[in-house]
Image (tube, rainbow, N blue to C red):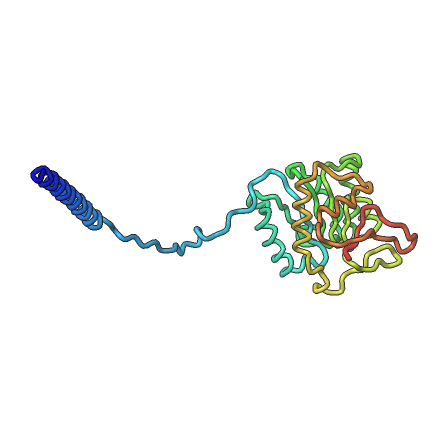
Amino acid sequence: MKNTKKYISGILFLSVLGFSLIFATVFCGCKKKQKIDDANNVDLTLNHSEENGLLTSPQKWHVTNKRVCVLFGYDFNNPEIEESLLAVLRDNFGLDEDGGLIYPISYPDDFKHGVRGYASDFAAILQNNELDLAGVVLLGAPERTHIALAENQDKWEQEVPYPVVALFPQDDVLGIESTCDIVVDKGQTAGLTGEIAPEESDAQIHQNAAEIIVETIKYIQLLDGAPSRTQELQKHMAQMLEGFQFHHYTDPESGLQSINHFVLN
């Protein structure tokens, strides 16, 4: 019996010893492998590129054959203001010269006959068959703008296939209302002659003019043709300038509200 116990004890001892040797071999092998792997490791340091081209924001617009004609009229044709707004339009939509959406024209610089030939020159631009117009936006529309728009309406037999929006116009009120789908003004008073009083200074331009212009053009892109001049225009106005408060323009002589002329509060 004693011999049997010794025999079993010997087997257990040899088993433990064998296991210890196996464990030590594996552990040393792993450690050796780790050292080899460490020797092959290379520390990489990533530096931020200072190339301007890699840091620019993604382009917001894409090349298109469509154009939205944007007229820079009174106040908006101030060189500093016009340049600033053009930068905003270039960033959001791209300019015609780059294959973008915006076809800008400035009054009176872009009209060969100056003020005297303005109406006919503007009508010719609108009727240029090389321009695939998706809309027209008038900024500070000067006098007789509505005459050019009326000529364009005649060309299309009163069914102009794209929206025409006047922002802060200074043309004859009734004339601009009859030739534009939507007219937007700030809180200014129309004179007894029916003309909107000209702004007294460039500082009088609406403080949110750039935002209003961008949102107007974005909305034009969503429209399938010109909107109907019905009560639905109020919904169009609310969607186009979401967040802005407005009311219908009221004619000072007749007391009648215009269906397509709105005044920002």
